[in-house]
Length: 67
Image 1 (cartoon, helix red, strand yellow):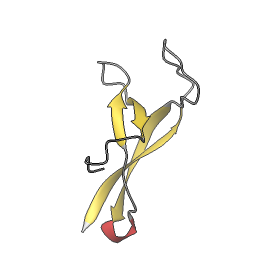
Image 2 (cartoon, rainbow, N blue to C red):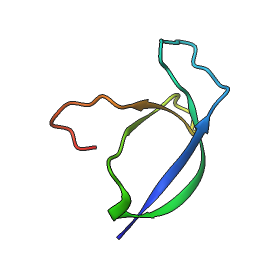
Image 3 (cartoon, rainbow, N blue to C red):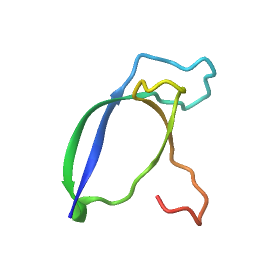
Image 4 (cartoon, one colour):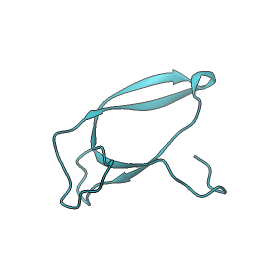
């Protein structure tokens, strides 16, 4: 089994509402990875309604949520 992984890099773009520890990443490329090498995932939230490839990374989820 394989997974399609999105690769990200740090962005110069900043949201209007900033908060401490906020890091903005941009989607750069895709890679196929064997599932046996994946440890866990993350929750990506679009930074705006436009499809710009910019997301907020949410690493805090409810204990009953599957990531």
